[in-house]
Image (cartoon, rainbow over all chains, first blue to last red; front, side, top):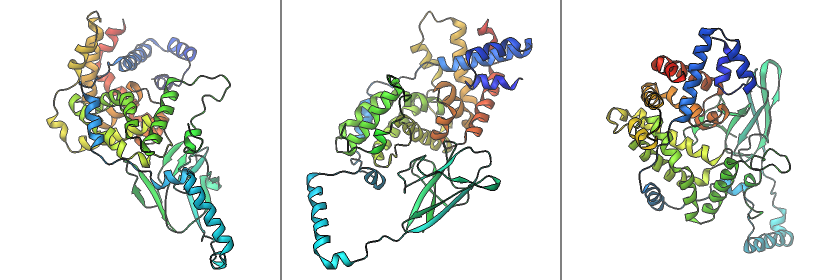
Length: 194
Length: 212
């Protein structure tokens, strides 16, 4: 079978390319391609499976039975919230830092350590790392391509445990060389302890 | 929308980035979903209700097709929505809310299938769903082909059925499927390809008869 038939079924060809392909196929292959197209068409036509009456109410009852969700740490870090009270608190803290020599003299500089992350992906066009240190951004922290298809990055991070995944051409991939933990949704995050 | 809201709300997938571009219904739906997530996390517990309304029936259909059992699908979809609600604080915003819900729902389906619960599954979806949703004038061959497809789908190995449903029934792209399933795009293409081969083989002349 012409490999372009798979590209056609995978929605990778334009309408014009599809017509040209089907027209160019030998009779037997054309019949097969049309049957597979019919299969794809039937799948798209499958009727919806409507929930039984009261579905929404049952979901809502389950939801009400659960504690209200709370912001995870990552969400708080991504969300700079300033209520009037917290703004006053911030001003008070700043004044205290200026006026109180004892507080001012304490070295506040956080300790930074360097995490060196690497993944081998010779075919990749772009690799980045997303983690709890960059708000799980898929493009904020790109890796540099090195010889042999190795991609690397050095990240200054605070001490402690950090979770991350590589993003290889847009696909989240756990670091194959690092220990992993369940991300709570059926996938795995790699972890690094600094 | 408050300017202090989470950054990913402001960095929604740009609507094509061109002046005058209208958001697709899917983009608009996702923006509403993300806003609902924020409002729930701000304490408005009813803000999740529209999310349930928008995605409930699609999740039921997904779970029913992946497990091959309508009642199970409904139960798993309910549980997925309730679990999602409880986990909203950990939603990272790196994918559409719809895809995040699908991911949670699929995990429930996989657990159910792994537990071997399929042996005791209740009513299957095919004839029941078709008889209520297809009009009486639907051509007989088309009706039979759809029924046969539902049956053939249930006979597929789980991993191939899941991939086929996501690509051909739910119309996800391979990249979206990768985000939802955690599998690589290459592996997913292979699964969909094999699923098509198996279904083609199982459905045989039905596909050709309908085409004429």
